Amino acid sequence: MRAVELSIKFIAMVLAVAGIMACSQELPRTITFPHYAVRNVDNQEITYIEKTDTATVVSMKSFFIPGWWIRIDPGIHLLADGKKYPLIGTESITPGKKFKMPKKGEPNEGIAEYKLFFAPLPYDAAECSLIEGNARSSFNFLHIDLTGKPAKPSKAPKIRTKTLPAPSFDSGMARVEFVLGCSLRGLPKMDATLYCQSLFPLEVEEYSAKFDDTGTAVFEFWLNGTGKCRGWIDEDNARTGFFVEPGGTVKVILDGSSRNKTIERFGLDESAPSRPVFSGSYSDLNNFISSDSDSKYSFNLYDVIFSSDANSGEELFMAVKDSCERKMEAVDADGSVPPIGRAFYKSAIIAEAFNAIQAAPYILETQGKESLTIPVEAYKWLSGFELDSPDRAFSGHVYANLADSSVLAYSCPKGEGYLAEVKYALPLIAKVRSGESLTEEELAKAKSFKTPLFAKGIFKAMEDYAGAMQQLPDNVSSFPDLPPEHILDTILERYKGKTVLVTVWATGFPFCTQAIKAIESDKSTRYKDVTFVYITGTVSPRDKWLAMIPEIKGEHYYLNDGQMESVLNEFGPNNFHAYMVVAPDGSRVYTRVGWNDKVRDKLENTLKKYK
Image 1 (spheres, one colour):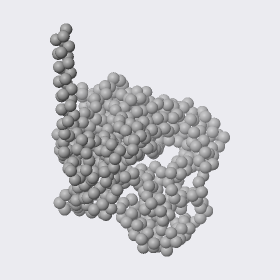
Image 2 (tube, one colour; image 1 turned 135 degrees about the vertical axis):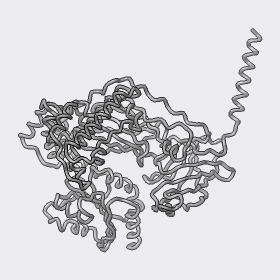
Image 3 (cartoon, rainbow, N blue to C red; image 1 turned 45 degrees about the vertical axis):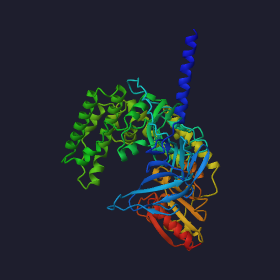
Image 4 (cartoon, rainbow, N blue to C red; image 1 turned 90 degrees about the horizontal axis):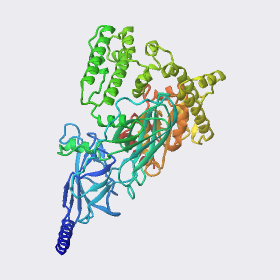
C-alpha cells in the first residue's frame, strides 16, 4: 500500500514538473499567417507578426482595385488583455495619407505591401486584436492567435432528413441569429446585414443588426411565407445563404475569419475554415446548402441561351430541354449527394429551366439576335414537373416569374393554391404600399384568400403604412404639382449657400443602400458641413421608404414618375445609385452613377474650396 502511495506521488510530481516546463516554454516570436476569430473585410491580410524588444511588427498585404487608393487610420493599434499598444512607426505607407494602388500592368497590380510597428507586446501574449477603428470603412482583425497552433475546424453536422421540408404559406415574425462564437467585449461592434425574399410580395427586404458583446447579432422581422435569405458581416465577409419560416428561428454559427481567401491567395497547406452551421427552422436543408458552397450542380441555363445558335424557338427549347434532362440524370446518378440534396438540386434545375425559357426572347434581344417565339410545347413540357408544387417555394424566382406569367394555365392547371391567388393579391399589396386606400370590394377580396399569407400580408402592410404616416419626420418633402422640368432646380435652390451631395436611390437596390451606409458614420465628422439630399420615387414602395429614412440623416424627397424621370435624365436614363456634388454657389461640380472614391474627392475638394 505504501509503495502504491509513493508511486502516485511520483507520478503527480512528474506531471507537475511537465506542466511547469510546458508553461515556461516561450511562445514563438514570429507567427506567419496567424489565425484569428473574425475579420470584417477580406481585402486585408496579415502575412506575419513578429514580437521584438522594441516593437511588435505586423506585416500586411492589401488587395484593392488597381489605380485606386487606400488609407490607414493613424489611430490603428493592437489590443491585448485590455491594454492598447499604439502605432509607433510604419514602412512603405504613411498613416492618414492616400496610398495609390499599383495600376494594371504594373508589378503587383492592385496589391500593397507594408509594415506597421506597434509598441512591443509581452512575449507571453497569446492573443491580440488589430483595430483600425469603428468606422464602417475601417478594418479589424479580432482575437489573433499568437501561439502558432493550427486552428481546429468544427465538424460538419449530420443531415438526417431525406426530403425537402414543407414550406410555409403563412405569415408571422421570424428570427435569425448570427453567432460568431467569440466575445466582442471591449472590441469594435461589427454590423451584420440580412436580405430576405419572401413569397409575398416577392421582393427582397434588407435588415441590419449590430453584434453585441457576446458576438451575437439578432434580426426579427415580419415574413410572408418561406423566406430565402443571404447575409454577411460588415463588408461582405462570411457570406451565407439559407431559408427561414414565419414563426421560426434560424441560428447560424459563422466562421468570421474569411480564411478561405487567405488559403487561396497564398497557397497555404491547411484545412479550409468551417462552414456556417445551422440549427432551428429548415436546419437540414440549410446545412446541406452550407456544405454545397461550391455548388456542385450549379445550373445556369441562361448560358444555354447565350451560346445557342438556334434558328427557331423550337430549337432553342430543345437545347434547354436537353441540358435540363442531362443535369437531372446526373443528379439522380450521384450517390455522393444526400437525398435532400438531390431534391433541392432538381427543384433548382426545374426553376432554372423555366426562367431560361421565359427570359430567352429578352436575352436574344440584348445580344442583337433575332427574337424567337418559344413554342407552347415548352410550357407543356415544364408543366410535367409540377411548377405549382410547394417545393418551388425553395426556388423563389420561379414563383416570381409565374406570378406574372402568360402560361399560368400550364403551371397551375387546378386553378387553386398560391399561384392561383397571387396574381390577384399582388396588385392589392402594391396599392397599399404606394399609400392608396383599398375599396370595399378590394378589402373583401383580400379577406377571401385561402392562402393565409395574402390576407395577413396585406393587412399588415396597411397597419405599417398607417403607423409610418403618423411618425412622418420633418425632413421629408414632395412637390406633387411641380412640373418635372423644374423639380431638381427647385430642390437645389433650397440649399443655396451650402455644399450638397445629392443621392438618387431606390430602397430595393442593395448597391444604393450599402453606399448610403458606408458614409453614414462620417456625416457628423468629416462631412458635418455637407447637406445630404436623397431623392427617390415610386420605384421605392412608399411604406418601405418611410421605414428606412429615419436611419438616413439628410433631406428626403419622394417624387412622382414624371419628376423622377426628369432627375434621372441628369445622369442618363434609368440610372439609380447616382450622385451629384453641388457647390454653395449652386454650380453642379460632379455627377456620377455609382459611388466611388472620386465622389468623395470631389466632395472634399468642394468643402475645402468654399470653406
